[in-house]
Image 1 (cartoon, rainbow, N blue to C red):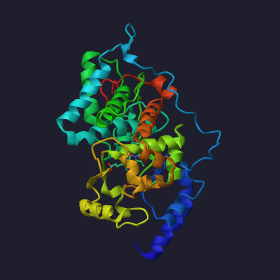
Image 2: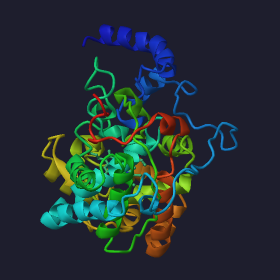
Image 3: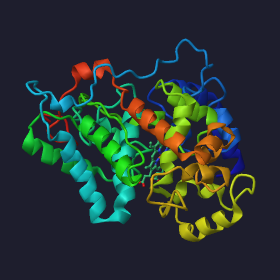
Image 4: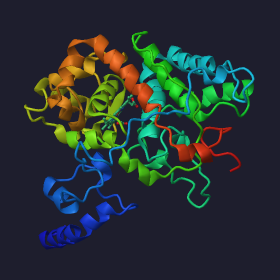
Length: 377
Ligand code: HEM
């Protein structure tokens, strides 16, 4: 593009940007999933125009912590109720365990299929844990692919939906139309966390969620992204009623799984104050200038859910700007030095995440027969 054209383009953006950032439906800011040069970023979304700007801590609009009052433990064990399905939780565990046993190297996929899907599902829009991220067709027949699964942060990133489908098939055979996909995802996240931490992490996960009937790709821009700043990360979690400490605690899940080179290639070659030189050199070899290549998130114990992520943060050996942004947070040191403290906090934070259940979506929800499509479609 010629210099003059570029100047016109930037000037236009300066006018269009602020409005675009405020309007729902136009998502130029992409909340940390798009790296834009800082000047362009400023012109597009000057301070105050971003829907993701952190409100003051004492803001009266800060939502209360998720209560999930309508959920209960052992929800499917209540004999005599219409939700009675005593084998539900063990069938989910079997499906997760079978997938991990089949291919231990596949463990990250399983974790992704449960935990990451769980997180994305809960964090997107105000409908919380309603399995909307599993849908690839919604009630809107005009836009059958326009679901959260297709949103920029999730497309090509979320994997392993087949584990959830396998669990659902086994449960439908035992108790038709009784157990929601949202509960299956939550139980699978719990079981994968336990199996991949070798029993160190045991989450209490209540049940009783319903599945949503809508899912919109453009709502995934509420997910924080690999280019998010600390303030943006804290803001995204705060908007869901989760604390900064819970955000830091949950980020420990980046001790497992893989990431596409495209999400951190802009950090190579490294700035020595933010990335270890030898670590960066290895990444360059693995990425081979191909943004689609994938590398382990935790170079130490790639297939174990542990507190190594925090050691990596402190040693400048993490992949994303958003991981590096946590370096200044006090809890990182504590999580790195005391694994048990982090494990207990992780259990609690995951349980809290699972309590993000919106009353409205509950009223309008259903128990899906197949997790990737709404009933009657
Ligand atoms: C704090 C904000 C977060 C950001 C910005 C973020 C960003 C990312 C990105 C960019 C990837 C790589 C995706 C790809 O290349 O395909 C990723 C992977 C992953 N994330 Fe996060 N994440 C966040 C929080 C979380 C949380 C809270 C959890 C779970 C509790 C989580 C679990 C995972 C897992 C398991 C993977 C590996 C996925 C795989 O192997 O396919 N993340 N994350």
